Amino acid sequence: MAGWQDETGRNEMIPEPLDFNGLHTYSLHGRPSKVTVEQFARPLRAGSSVRALLDSLPDQLLGRDFPELIHRLAAVHRAHRPLIVGMGAHVIKVGLNPLLIDLMERSVITGLAMNGACIIHDAEIAMAGFTSEEVGNVLGDGAFGAARETGEFLNGSINSGASQGLGLGAAVGAALRANNFPHNNKSLLATASRLGIPVTVFVAMGTDIIHIHPSASGASIGASSHLDFRIFCAQIADLQGGAYLNIGSAVLLPEVFLKALTVVRNLGHRVDDFTTANFDFMKQYRPLTNVVNRPTAGGGKGYHITGHHELMIPLLAAALLDELASGQDHT
Image (cartoon, rainbow, N blue to C red; front, top):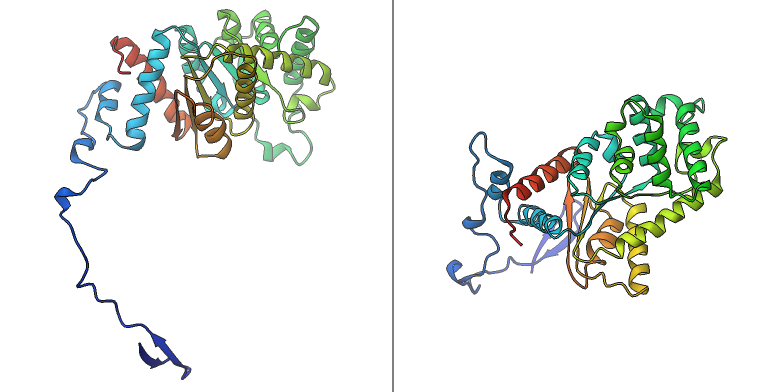
């Protein structure tokens, strides 16, 4: 130990520097390594295909996982197994309905699960061609969420549907078609109703603007949303060999999916070999735990894809269609 005085005059003791001369070394060429030049990305030529883009990715992390996910989803479709998409409303608000509709038209997506906000933005798109008000501009005077047409149409549809024994998604989809709104071709719910694709909607009371309208009925919302949960459970009971994608729902849909999975397993349905994926801006506990990790612990595989929906979902759709068009299965 060597002694010295600091600026206050105190004596401090510091250790002598460690001598590294006795360090044991080994050859770089005999050491296992996680990265090799064979795994590096390859430059693309101008005008390359989506498939060429995926083939050019580095064989590391998401560069490995994303193409593998595409191969698995293509195999799901070729085997005529279900591919269900659970989603939050941001997917609609960033303009992705046409891509999801295209996959529905092609029978790639076989079911949609939504939170309550999705039906609001989807219905406003169908009715008016626009959605998503600037909350900060209207919250101060209590005008947020008070759009008359939105509340009256959606609550009326739910109330009428509940009286007929319909699930919430089916009720809204049928009402959109019955009203023949000018932008129904951009609506997920109207398209699903036309194609006979089940849409299930899971509502947390008080979270959606239509709940503040006098036409809202807690009984109708609760009954039709609970019926949708039972319909969703029937879909999950048939998920063996299929896939479930969670896009942009951080809490509600991951919880619903986990509860549905435990229900169907409890009732004796074999659902232990399937593919899951979560798409979101960041890694969060519930999607990682309830969608990616826990459900596939006994079989299948889960993936987490981090990135903006407006980039990652178009890439997903383009890559999947390119893979299906190639007629090849890489699984």
